[in-house]
Image 1 (cartoon, rainbow, N blue to C red):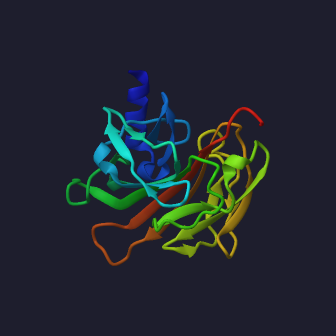
Image 2: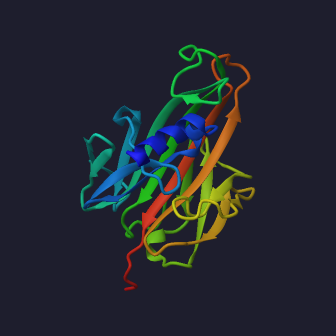
Length: 239
């Protein structure tokens, strides 16, 4: 009960809390699942907010993927030859009122709204070490690894490239490990959208990047926010 209360309170009082949250894919009780949270938190969400999900097999071709809805999150039934999973999550409109609280509603639906944004989340999950090369999937904001991270170990260097609207994105802040080290100083993408970081965990790693775009020609919103992650889990063995 205390955890549920704290989560609800956080959503009400933190500025742009919907934007600070991200999604990523990891294992839950033997199956892959889409997690929605901020840092180490793991929050329930509306299944309908998952607007697209695709998987690639070990040859880079699309692979069938079954999604099962639970009361709190989505479980993915992935074939054994799944190599990469992409997902898009529409967190909708969030409006702030004079009392500082945030509401998951449009400006018109929120009495006394002073600021409204529209927020989307994206994720790429590397599942298998077979696929050597990766390319952008077409998501609005995404992180593309320049080598397969599953072939690395804790402390190794991994180069990534960030794309926004399909173009390498310069000057974006990258969090090297979002779930366990989100307060560490971020790295900044160069002119080609690239950055090199050290793999932090011999286990789950979630790399994150965000971008906010001011909106001046739409009276219904003041900004659009995008948050994207790259997740992968390293084996605890070193074979």
